[in-house]
Length: 72
Image (cartoon, rainbow, N blue to C red; front, side):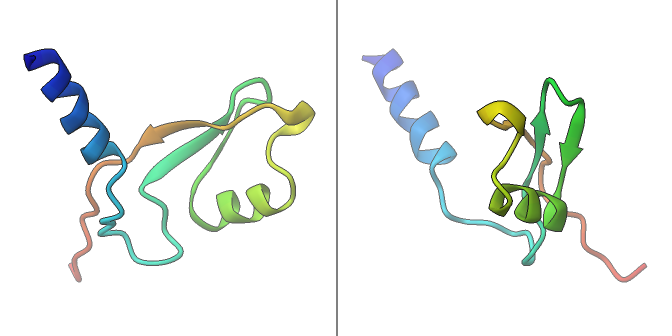
């Protein structure tokens, strides 16, 4: 029962649409593993719209955490 509750909570958190990052910033890093290239923000949007990674390889995503947006 505890395991099922944990899985449901993780799915709810992972599928949340709440995003504190301003557009066009992405809350993740996207990597084309075999190309050795990491994309963020506009570069990711442009690459995804151009067809993604070479040879149909899927992107690997890594979390960037919460934004630290200040006027310092």
